[in-house]
Amino acid sequence: MEFIPTQEKLIPDLSPREEVVLLARTLWREGYDDHVAGHITYRQPDGTFLCNPWFLLWSELRAEHIIRIDGDGNVLEGDWPAPLGIPLHLELHKLREDVTVAMHNHPRYGTIWADAGRVPPAYDQSSAMGGGELVLVDEYEGGVDNANFARSAVEAMGGADLALLANHGVFVLGSSIRAVHQRAVALEQRCRNAWHVEALGGGKPLTGPVADAFRQSDGTRFIGFWEAMVRVELEADPTLLSADR
Image (tube, rainbow, N blue to C red):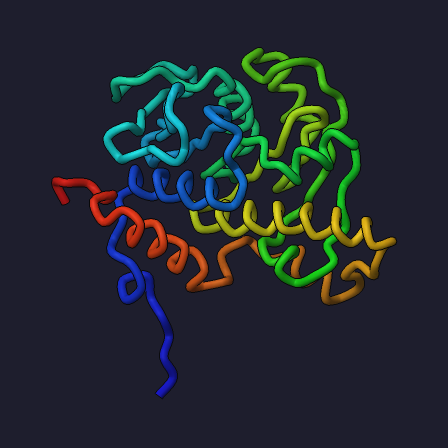
């Protein structure tokens, strides 16, 4: 009999706040660890957004820390302030109703390629697994805590799913927490592997129908990957899920 895994068989049911926490913690392990930098927004059915707060590392987030904000960045629920760079997300969500989850941070290899102003090739399947279109936004006008600069960056992205923000970091978008997790992991792997391949003198990128098939993925097809990384976090901290579940 064919076994078709479901989330319920692989991890516990997660609340939206727990999903944000686990996305932050899993990505911290993947190199999205620039101190207190970085923000995640998760659009809710009522038009508000769950968000990690300012002042806390992604590695220490818990469900009770997650705040809920409105489309103007006002904190509606929670005891912490919104991140300074939240205008980037607010401008993105205003222009892109197709985006449910957005994540910005400054991972090591993604930021190196952003600093170089170059889009790295995808040399292997794991580097392309998240799918989506990756673009370079090469005009650095200033920090994205400025709404005008943030809107310019979002407009320069067009309909892309991932962006290297020149002299800054990366921006990853998706329809779900799972999609953004897969895309963010694949993006940093793509940037890291391309750096090493170039150090060896170059290689052969994925091209043609295979590359196109990977690019067309919405980031949700690798069932089991997000769940495996969630289990790593829950094993490391068995108390991580909400106490009132």
